[in-house]
Image 1: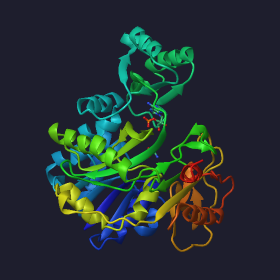
Image 2: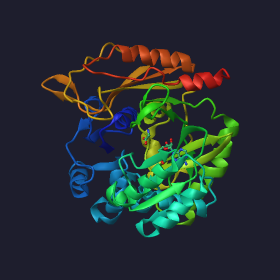
Image 3: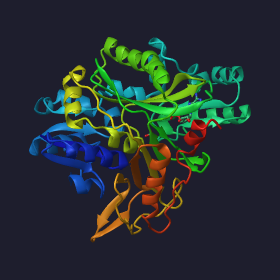
Length: 429
Ligand code: AMP
Ligand code: GLY
């Protein structure tokens, strides 16, 4: 069949590689894609948020499956647009309806969903400008650090964690005053959870689910988890502390009630659920839901999938995921992200990249790259990443870093400590 994948990052390059491997895939289109996706399929210059444009392309190119990488088109209702447009109704869409996507699109909606379904999460309340004094009183009742979250999508910048009460109150007033526009017209204030974070990925057809491998990402720009937040500077899969006993708790307390909740509330959800979790002394708590795969978690999770991803997606779209099982490579994947100098603040694009030489069992995924006049150029903050598969985490890290050292452009930066926290945990430090 012909498949259209929406998005342009490393996540999409990693998904595209798996789609292209499938015998079920005839032609793969990626919109808008990057220089990496152009090596495994055909890039098309479409705006994923212009549904009419996407729909017209799907019809004229006999696309039978639409896979949505990023959250924005989902939150804007692309799955509903396809379901409600007669000519597009039979296209299989991998990605939830607008209502399902509210699990990511509104923190308040997600927290209320978790409360209804008794899913463990931090205690919270939601406030608007009209309830500022109640919000301040709620902050007074909590212990530092204080966690403030813009209700809506704020390009990953909408969460503030502050140690000082007066500063937290000042941030609260700024947020309710429009710091993140409409996204912070409502603000969720919640208890701080201390522990170690991990991401769990679920593929669901709204009735049944498959648990994909877990992963850990590294969000801060600086080594030792310091400095500004980024989209993600690397990832590791599986997460060593997410052992059988912990994952059973995750499944029983979080995944099953989430899927049951979607089903009971009749929410059309056919796609990924990315559960951001905190491991608090051995017990999992949900920090957030995302309605897509993570980036760069996909770059370490997808290379480990041995099942035919197109078949999994067909069953997802058709509601028959109970007929599938998942086959996963038992090796560890380690992904190292390389970024443009200055990222996540201002940085330059258009630097020529030298790709170096391929190594066995190491994949290179493009994130922000483009081809111009036969040259490969940087075209974003996160530029390119390497993922190595190896029997152990230290070996995977060594291979991934060796490959990354061979990729160069002016201003390239990467963290050198991806996975080190996990290695320390493993040796009990
Ligand atoms: P979110 O966008 O909800 O994932 O939040 C961004 C980051 O803030 C998370 O990845 C956590 O590191 C941190 N965070 C969010 N909520 C909490 C919380 N209740 N306690 C501790 N850290 C949190
Ligand atoms: N790596 C975190 C995310 O994709 O949201």
